[in-house]
Figure 1 (tube, helix red, strand yellow):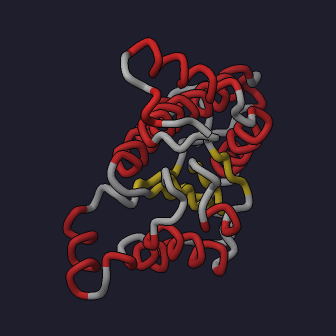
Figure 2: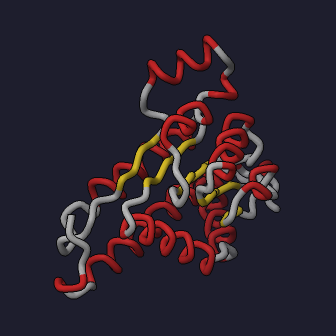
Length: 202
């Protein structure tokens, strides 16, 4: 783990970013890409969620998967939704129930067996993320997560989880974005390389 106090300029920050990036579990990242592609092929839904910067990434990644793969070789479109995007629903659940319920209650309305619940949390301990993962697993969905530090409580609730080996939240968030982009590129490359006759039809 890194010491956040040691980063005092841009050079040391990017050196630390590179050091942590080298230690990412690339095999697991590829497995996540494979599971997302399977979900697309089978018409299952992908739900993304997180707080703060992770909420922004949930929206960003949903856009990449939904729009970025829409015209690839006649393939099926991703049925992907960021649970962070409906502000009225989020505030209603937070106000009338609890902030811990803002993702889990949305999932209860939609999640089906074989869907993917994709959690993003730097600490891995956000209560609303943990509750949503529990709901997803109970429904028979595949639970995927990306986290940092030691993975937090989220790690044990995920079928696949990539933990960025760092205690620096900015490094963790930077590499979460990079992982999302790498997963998108893996998925889009596989979709683009299919012979047209083998491609899924929407």
